[in-house]
Length: 158
Image 1 (spheres, rainbow, N blue to C red):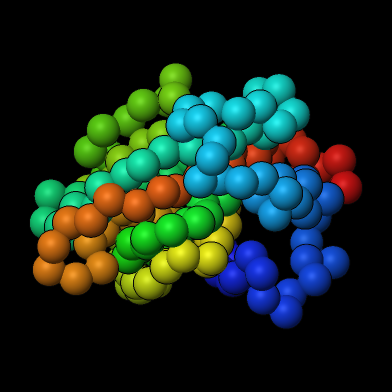
Image 2: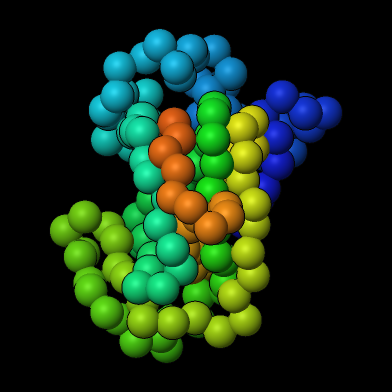
C-alpha cells in the first residue's frame, strides 16, 4: 500500500511505470469537470472510474480485495476513512464476485485506518485488504473520487 499526496514533494520516480502513468493522468485531468463514469487510459489494462460517492458507517461494511487489479484511489474533493490490513488469504468470504475482480471479506486481522482528504491518493495492491468509503465523522458526506484500476500485468512490463 502507498498513501501520499498528488501534489506533494514526492516525484514518483521510484514508482513502477504504470503507477506513474496513472498519477500523470490524475495530475493532467480536471476531475471536477470530467464526466462521471469510466475513462480508458490503456484499454482494459488501466482505466479510471470517476464517481461521486457517499460515505457510510463502519457497521455493516466489509473489506474488499482484488486479484487482477490494483486500486489507485484519489480524492479531488471531500474524503473518507479507509480500513487497511494485510490480506492473509485465510479470511472468510462474505460475497465473492470473481467476474468483477472483487471479493468482500467478513473481517480482517490488525486493521488500521487512513484518513483520506482532498489531494490524497492511496494505492492498494492485491495483498492489501481495504475497506473504503467510511465516514470521516458522524455524518455521511458525498465527495468526488477517482479509482484507477491498474492491471497487475502492467507491473511486470517495467
